[in-house]
Image (cartoon, rainbow, N blue to C red; front, top):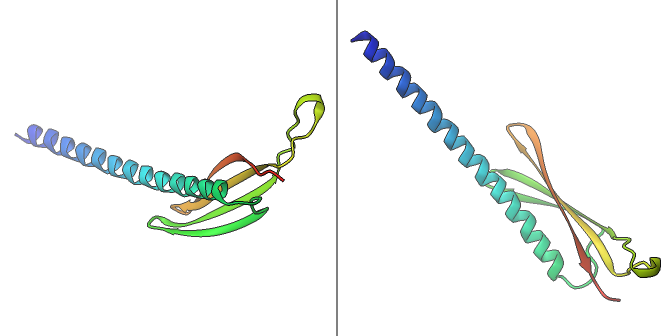
Length: 118
């Protein structure tokens, strides 16, 4: 009887630990999705705004998981075409999201090109 009870207790504790790990993984996944969405929204905003992107811009975004610092930087891409002619009007935009998870700084970054004629 005591052996059966011990096996049952160990099984219940293992199940509880597994459920806790699943909940933690779901929370981390939701946080990562939120950051990806913030980056995607800012990228769409930069692409849709007329004129050249801001050279340097920082934005603080308040989320349910804490504050996310969104850092945007832009510079001429320096791409060259045929006969080593530099393509003008193309900027390389870098978006970086920084936030803290359990006191540890996390970061995600995307880079993309924006073309503006003129």
